[in-house]
Length: 338
Image 1 (cartoon, rainbow, N blue to C red):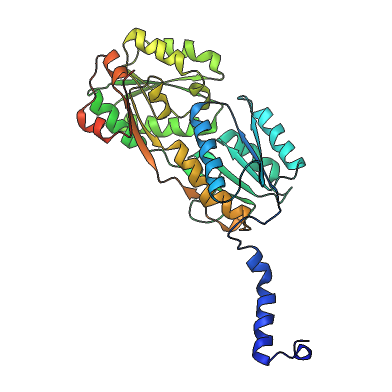
Image 2: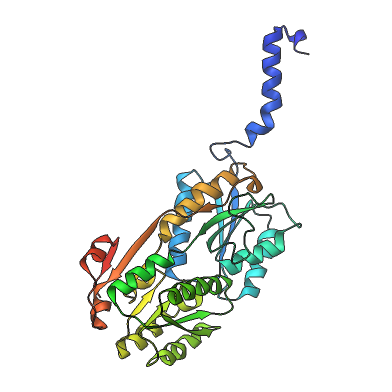
């Protein structure tokens, strides 16, 4: 064929190579296809500042890569209102809509997406907002791609660093109380890690489990008189009712620490955790965008968060009769005084 067009043998071979490589090149795009509208189905288990910061970072990361709402992107955001059953319905809706990418945020929604999509659709899943993906059953390995339609972005919580800071602010802690939703797989895993760290340091770990935000007030009050401090995890249910923890701890002058940095602005004394907004940006940039541009999720290794931050609240410490050591204050990315 090429000879009839007057091409030399070398030119013909080069042209043939280009044609043969065309499918691969199509999968290695560096920018969105012109004239195409992309659809992303994004869902989180509940509405609260940490998750909302991640979602905004995700949107900004997409925009920086050329995927912009109102131009070439339809971003279908859904909130499961704390109900795993609703999360399943949302994922089913996204599948029926044949979105270009499923972006489930938070472990309950991610697990729903995995159960509903495996073997039933080739829609890519790029998950985020997951802590301890092995413990929670989201991933089987951190060192190998899934080989399926799934990849994602995850965090290994800095539990040891948190305890170092908690004990530096309040030395001599003997008993710590915690509150978490026993129905959240992520919270179960984080509680297990925290309990092990506490016991390794000779600290008694007292657990109170809840199933809804309406139970947080009684749970917090039940710890008063039994513990030297309260430590709350990154728990979606607890985060939606932080005010109840603040009220109980402040009235009893018991320190409240958290593994969620966004809790610090709302009244916790200190926390070390992933940078919620930046992790949203990185989730989009390192995972979602490559998939949208044609990479196969099953060939992409899930990405671990690299950006963490320390936040402290000097007013919260003072309300509990404590002073945060100056080196910790200086190390903080944000210092709150109310």
